[in-house]
Structure formats: structure tokens, C-alpha cells
Image: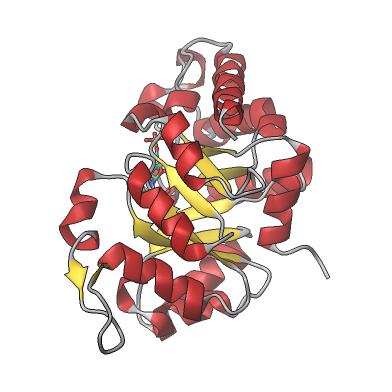
Amino acid sequence: MSATFTQTLASAWERNNSLLCVGLDPDPAKFPAHLKGRDDAILEFCKAIVDATADLVCAFKPQIAYFAARRAEDQLEDLIAHIHERHPGIPVILDAKRGDIGSTAQQYAVEAFERFRADAVTVNPYMGRDSVEPYLAYPDKGVILLCRTSNPGGSDLQFLHVQGGKAGEEPERLYERVARLVAEEWNRTGQCALVVGATYPHEIARVREITGFMPLLVPGIGAQGGDIEATVKAGRTGAGTGLMINSSRAILYAGTGEDFAQVSRQAALETRNSINRWR
Ligand SMILES: O=C(O)c1cc(=O)[nH]c(=O)n1[C@@H]1O[C@H](COP(=O)(O)O)[C@@H](O)[C@H]1O
């Protein structure tokens, strides 16, 4: 049997000595001049970044909207195939933030895991357990549920107090309930992870407390200004792992010339090393 997402991630943490996830959010308006106008510009840009950083990361995270908006889903398929072929052992997280009733979720699961061959997918837990089950039906795949998102508006709902599930329990915040539900009930197969933004280190610490060793996908360093030291200290496990700390724009667009991939490599190296300083 092939390795599960969780096992592949743990191996990548160790092999590359890295908790850095490079996010692949290709925006042609920001591409270097020599790639602009090419039909395969999105694929070529992303392949160059992937090849320049694969030994520095624990995962890659393509964001589906950047591909779908430009009718480039075929380039996303080719990109993920390229990562599997050239960089085996680096898990691919498809960032799709899906959420729908079970029958539709089943189609989204086929899209993520069979069409795109992602190792994990981001999912919105808002519609509850049956909306997540179709992803859990793929036991070797990762299911990464939104918990405490990095954006300011995340507080509108995720920070609301909800009554405890059992009589006499203290009210808790909605993101705490999500973390508890996933850790105690949905994660029977050990394939779940949670998204917690680097912009909220206090909540990262709380989610770590609730979930034990569960992997956390932490976007929000770099362009969104999250603090690396606070993020790592709040979210690392006792073993100094447990995190996929994502940076997209700060790495993808570090350079603007023909040597952009090398400049991105330098940015990824520095980010990985700053993360490691606090593990
Ligand atoms: O699920 C995500 O990846 C995600 C969750 C979240 O709470 N905040 C967040 O920024 N993201 C994604 O992480 C990436 C962050 O990109 P940068 O801000 O450029 O590093 C984008 O692809 C977002 O869609």
C-alpha cells in the first residue's frame, strides 16, 4: 500500500528539515516579462518554482481558483503530475476549500483526488460531518478543514461563542468547537488536519492544545504579515514538527526577472531557516 498523506508529510518534514509549504497562486499579471503571453505560462512559471524549491519544502499547495479563473485546469493537472513524477515524496495539497451536501461533495472528492491526484484537499466544515465524509472515504488522503482562517473577517463567525455540546459545559468559540469536533469525532482514521492562520498565534496555541499532534496548515506569514517566531512557538509539537507553514506571494514574486526561480529559491531558503530557528 502506498504511504498516506500524513506519513508522506512526516517524511518530508524530516527529509527536507522543513515546515515550509510553498503556495502556488499563479497570477499572470505578476509573471516575469519573458513568460507573459505564452499559452503555457502558468504551468511553466509553477514548474520553475517547484523545481527550484522542492528540496526546501514539506508540501506544495496549488490554489485552484488561480487556474480555473484562466481556464487552466489542464495546466493544474500537468503541474501536479510533474510534482509527483519529479519530486516524489512531496505532498500536494489542493487548496479548493470545498463544502457541499454529500452527493456533491463526492464529486468534489473525485475532482481533487482522482482528476487532480492531490494528496490532500482543503475543505470547509460549515455544512457538517456528512459533507466531509466523501473525502474521508479516501483513507490515504488528507482532509484539511478550515478552523481559524487568517483573514480579518474570519472572526465574524469563527469567534462567536457557541454553547457547549454537553449540559454544563462552558461556551466555547466556534473555531474551538471545529477543532474539538475534528479531533474527537471526525478524525477516526488519522487523516485530518486543520487550517489556522499565522495572523492569530494565540488561536494556533489553543488549537494545538485541543488537537494534540494533528498537523496544522498555517497560511498568513509573508504577504499577510504573520509573525514566524510566534507561529512556530504556538504551533509546533513536542517533536518540533506538526506544521505546514504556507507562504505564496512572498516566495512566488520575490523576483521579477529571468532568474525569478532562483530568487524564489533564496526566499524559500530564508523562510525555511527562519522557521527552523524557533522549532
Ligand atoms: O486554506 C488556505 O490555504 C488559506 C486559509 C486561510 O485562512 N488563509 C489563506 O490565506 N489561505 C490561502 O493561503 C494562501 C496565502 O497566500 P499568501 O498570503 O500570498 O502567502 C492563499 O492561497 C490563500 O487562499
